[in-house]
Structures are given as C-alpha cells and as structure tokens.
Image 1 (cartoon, rainbow, N blue to C red):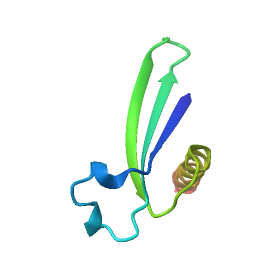
Image 2 (image 1 turned 60 degrees about the horizontal axis):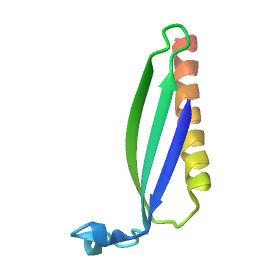
Image 3 (image 1 turned 135 degrees about the horizontal axis):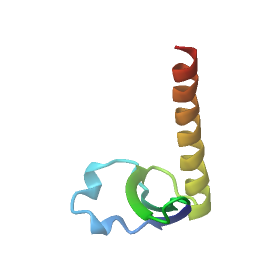
Length: 81
C-alpha cells in the first residue's frame, strides 16, 4: 500500500469556511493498494477536516494509527464472539 497525504491550509477554497470556527486544514489521503495474487491495483481517496496545522507526515501517521486501533477492536470482537 502506498499513501499520499495532502494538507491544504488555504481555506478560501471553501465558500463558507467562516462558518467552521477553528477549522485550520483540509486533508486528502489517497491510498493505492496492489493485491499480490491478482496484481490488481485499487485507489481510494478520503477527505478530512482538522483544527490543527501539522505536516502531512504527522497527519498521515495519526490517521493510520486511528484506523489500526479501530480494526484491532473489530478483530477482537470477532474472535471473542
């Protein structure tokens, strides 16, 4: 899997950005995955909003860590039940 994180701090792209108090950044994460058995490549794009200003590497790591915890909890539920 290859992930690309883009951080946008220019909020003038949003017509109503003033209605989001504390909004600091928009994030776009594009993930490309290749399935080893078939060689098929899929791409998914997710968007986030944040009240923080960080580097792309920090956002990418934090989002990845969040989903790792979420997936791990589901695995535990599936195994236990």
